[in-house]
Length: 428
Ligand code: GDP
Ligand code: GDP
Image 1 (cartoon, rainbow, N blue to C red):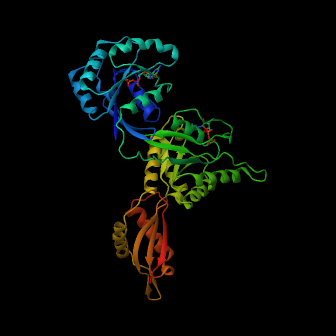
Image 2: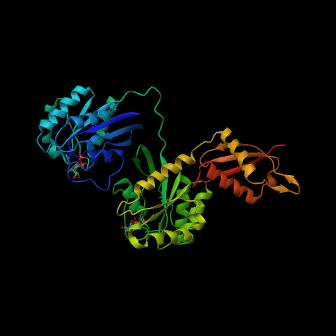
Image 3: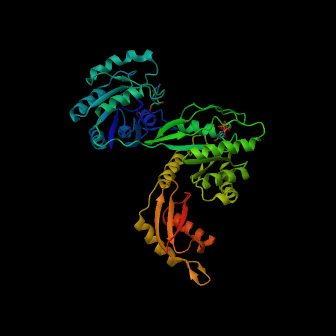
């Protein structure tokens, strides 16, 4: 894996830059020096390269450049192919900046000097002084306004070793946000991508014509599948139309985010969850507007949801507030986890070991004195995981036994939340 370190004095905008590159704005960027204490690591994706970014920011205790910090920084930067040296050129260069420059020169790694907070081209005049550091042309960027980041990453790519093997295409996770109007789907998308690409509106059903939106998070590309193009037919109700749109979205996605409103929750949501699950796609129930539930009612609200969502208990649940950006990391992490499991392939030897265990655990169905015999199990497909079981007679399999197997597969093979299919094949 490629590795790139970010260094610089406190408050120059290292963690803002880090957050921008790793994929999203963090809710809180502290405004006073030295708040982050450790080196932070994150994975980013650029032109199909996965790059580990190290933000050494937390290592600086103050403005001084001390031996202890130097050592920790060297340790954190071990193996990095290049260093992004961030400065805020609106301040004059300090003695510490020159010391760091000297140290970087001795380390012998390629250094890219980045002038941050160049929010508009008028500020470019600030760059002149940075030439004096001796690392060539300083690059103007603005972490806050996402300016100059591609130029920066192009420079970084110059220093990364060519991969011998072809760089595998990083498959995007296609997700869709479904749910009734006004639950906060567009607001969630904005919170996730940190952008205003989608129109948020207070009138139910006003998100129109947007196309697929893409973004990167923690080295993973996501695509939000939109369903523009489905026209509401005059003879369909709003509910029917919403259902049609959702069906189209489900077909085109890998993971479905079913967004709910705690106060309005009914058959519609259960239907959608089952629709997604039946089509073999994992579903995450996103309970949005969680900020509206008063602290003292949180436990009770969760209990209510347990009850109301009993029939779709298979779907993992994440609590979010699009407005406070609460739960967004959890949501994306859950999506990545489910996607990986949905794609996973379990070795045949492991499956057959479990098949043995399951036959001992519960008596196999017995049909007028004749027994179901299961000989062999293998995984034929992924996404959704599809298991083929060879048996003497498929018609001996009872519904309750199949349920038992589904439960075992989910638990013992760690596929909770993943739709799983079993196919029976007869073999003499
Ligand atoms: P760090 O200590 O180097 O990690 O710096 P932070 O990322 O915490 O940023 C310090 C301050 O600079 C914060 O108030 C940020 O909002 C601000 N900042 C970061 N990047 C930019 C930028 O590109 N333009 C402007 N104007 N301010 C920025
Ligand atoms: P959509 O129709 O599902 O895309 O919903 P929108 O994103 O347009 O949001 C509908 C309304 O709910 C807007 O007024 C949002 O500001 C508000 N909203 C969205 N998410 C939240 C949240 O997490 N908390 C609160 N309090 N309001 C939210």
